[in-house]
Image: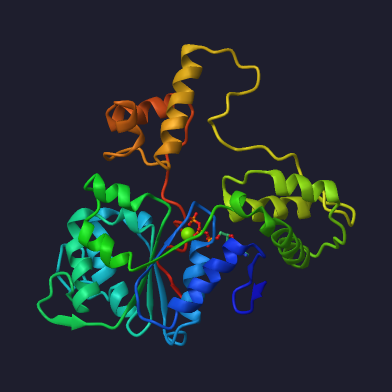
Amino acid sequence: MQSRRHDIVGESAALGHVLDQVEVVAPTDAAVLVLGETGTGKELIAHAIHDASGRRDRPFIKVNCAAIPSGLFESELFGHERGAFTSAIAQRTGRFELADGGTLFLDEVGEIPLELQPKLLRVLQEHEFERLGGTRTMTVDVRVIAATNRDLAGMVEARCFRDDLYYRLNVFPIAIPPLRERAEDIDALVDHFVGEFARRLNRHIDEVSSETRQALRQHPWPGNVRELENVIQRAVILSRSGRLAIPPLHIESPLRPIHGEAETLDSIKRAAIARALEQASGVVGGPRGAAARLGLKRTTLQSMMKRHGFGLPLPRERTDDVSPVAG
Ligand SMILES: Nc1ncnc2c1ncn2[C@@H]1O[C@H](COP(=O)(O)OP(=O)(O)OP(=O)(O)O)[C@@H](O)[C@H]1O
Ligand SMILES: [Mg+2]
């Protein structure tokens, strides 16, 4: 099965169910919450909803909530008037205004600061807001699609996300299952990415051996489709003959002890940090973050992470975070 506009590839019943939901909800103006682990295709699905909606010829505006410093959020979403704050030397149009008539995609919506959540709720319910430093009430017609790989319901319970906003966003949830739970999609995805990268990199690959396919089907893919895509790209670059050669697949997680490593206090600490980070989806601070799970202060955990060679989690996709995407 391949949807024409988006190259959403896969044959599993689970993906078929997701695409059915896209088809049902797209023509409505309902808010959609796309849930799924990293790399499962949440952004792809958000685009598919927009393109199957009556808003397809209007803008699709993406906001990566993880990439905006908390002090700039309000002006990013709602814009500001000239002089609203010291560095506001000109009036600025916010993302809601840019998305008027179209779709606003709030990626990593769990990162929206609590203090801004009431204003977001208001625009979702009343379609109204004021620019920062402004008095004029603006009215917009925006369909909101939000996405997260975090446990939003858990965040509501922990009071780091407002329940009223959660219910408003969660009108129509679409959960994309991780790739390991729909391994039937892997073959089709491999063919799709091999074709794509061979064309782009000007390589001829006409064979993927059954052993290679089996190895790819059996890998757990913690980074889901994005990880598979990257592995195939690397493999296409490395393949000198017409046969796809994949580099050895290993699970890139600091959780696994390095093979043969003796159990020292350091290795136990490292494993505990890795496990807590994994359980907290990489989030260090906050009531459900890794630091709280370990009974440590956030700053203590951060310095331990540094000492034990963990990269501090960074917001992903800093590059194209807030640029408008042609719809
Ligand atoms: N079913 C699919 N068919 C083809 N390509 C896919 C599919 N699912 C995901 N991809 C590709 O995998 C990559 C990751 O997808 P996407 O960015 O939508 O994931 P995501 O869930 O938003 O990830 P993150 O949580 O890390 O932001 C993209 O390049 C996307 O095009
Ligand atoms: Mg994404």
